[in-house]
Amino acid sequence: MKRVLIANRGEIAVRVIRACRQLGLETVAVFSTADREAAHTRLADRAICIGPPPAAGSYLNIPALVTTALGSGCDAVHPGYGFLAENAGFAEKCEEHGLCFVGPPPSAIQAMGDKVRARELAAKIGVSVVPGSDGPIATLAETASVGRRIGYPLLLKAAAGGGGRGMRVVRTESALADAFVGAQAEAGAAFGDPTLYAERFLERVRHVEIQVLADAEGAAVHLGERDCSLQRRHQKLLEEAPSPAVTPALRASMGDAALALVRQIGYRNAGTVEFVLEPASGRFYFIEMNTRIQVEHPVTEMLTGIDLVTTQLRIAAGKPLGFGQADVVMRGHAIECRINAEDPTLDFRPGPGLITRWQPPLGEGIRIDTHVAAGTTVTPFYDSLLAKVVVADGDRPAAIARMRRALADFDVQGVPTTIAFHRRVLEHPDFVAGRVHTRWAEEDRQTSGALRE
Image 1 (tube, rainbow, N blue to C red):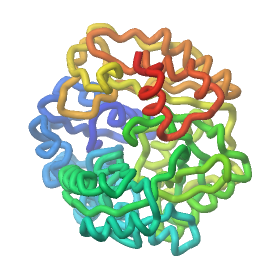
Image 2 (tube, one colour):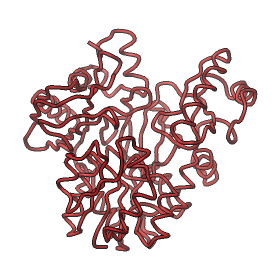
Image 3 (spheres, helix red, strand yellow):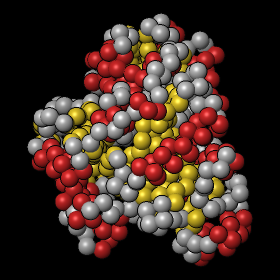
Image 4 (tube, rainbow, N blue to C red):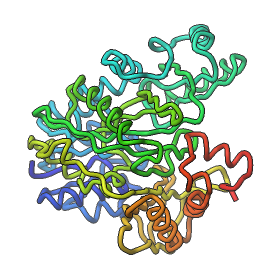
């Protein structure tokens, strides 16, 4: 591996370029015409325009990406996250043309990309899954039958994707028809596949995910958990590790379950196995696996000292993992806040525009992953993520205090941001006490409005 095409944009493209530079690898960035002046185009050794602003004509254009990689002399492709990162067809095209895909084999992407099949595989090896449909649900009548069998509230989910798209919570059978039609339409638009499945919607659970690494020789480890319970409409807002709700024994059990799945599908590279956890009982249930690097991977890096992106590249190049489970040590506590160009007072409406001031916090234990600066124009074409603020300290109270200071020092002008929202979260007694769950942010805003104002 000598030259890597980064098939992405934004902060993850910057992150991959820096990892490649650390390993002495050359980089080729791609960009749409809207991203002509973007940071990743300046940092890469070479940057090539891939198409117009709409992602379908640029960052999702598989023929153009493969042609660009071959034409620029690349021997590897890193997909980042989002866009084509979990597209088995893209991974296959890369392999067909002799390009190393920095990620799992297409078979593993396919196995976990179909959420119905993923549930079946998990259940087959004894990993608990949320009670739900036995397979995809094709009709409203079939869905109603599932609801009567497992009970309400019911969660409709897209079989071909995640990230909150194609998902609907249904609390009564009378609301099922509208939810079914809406979820199907959204799933079809987002993933090109309207297929749904259903699960029992578990109230007041935590969302806990296990980071895994596996090499081509069969060695696999987990790097502990990240707690992603602070969400809005199934979209993560803040992540931390370790989880306030996970004991060492529970961590070992969840890690074993994640690695069992990894071995079952012949996984390779970095991935994340996601669970919902009932804190009172300690029961956890598999929900999906993300076959890519996660947005929140810096939390684990800060906690373990393991660089996940350079490890991805080394594994893809055929090198062994080089360490075992006993070598993974988590020290202290880490928290990540996603800073988006959104207005929380207007239901998190995106706010594109020109950033006129960008003064990020500095100091020990603070990390900023970003692709923007003063003078950057935030376009309406892509995700509104501006930066990830990540802090680490000796324990959770110290990490919370450090994040509060970091956000207080973060000065952004010209576009709305979620900084003030995160500052209110970090001051909230429920968060400080570790009592949040996946519905907490929405419930608090509906009752007291404390997070909105």
